[in-house]
Image 1 (cartoon, rainbow, N blue to C red):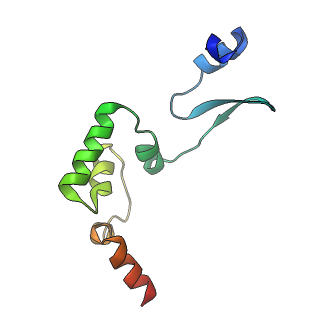
Image 2 (image 1 turned 30 degrees about the vertical axis):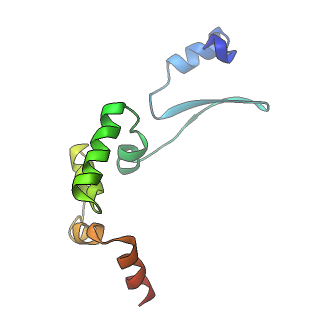
Length: 103
């Protein structure tokens, strides 16, 4: 963090932050800690950064094609109320979604 020109207090701030929720922005206008209050669904996707997780996502996409997202959410332990109908919806390609929207 020294290479980023942070002082001791700023390093303490960063050390106390929650991973993948809290961020520290450094800009010419100042420095600010902020929180992305992502819900469990958004966090299940936006919080993926490890090589193993990214590889798992790639394998799901290759194995399942459209609709891989629901399986990913299940694997991440995300509970979705009202999931009925989502699986059929998720299996449609973007072209099929467009045709329904245009009808």
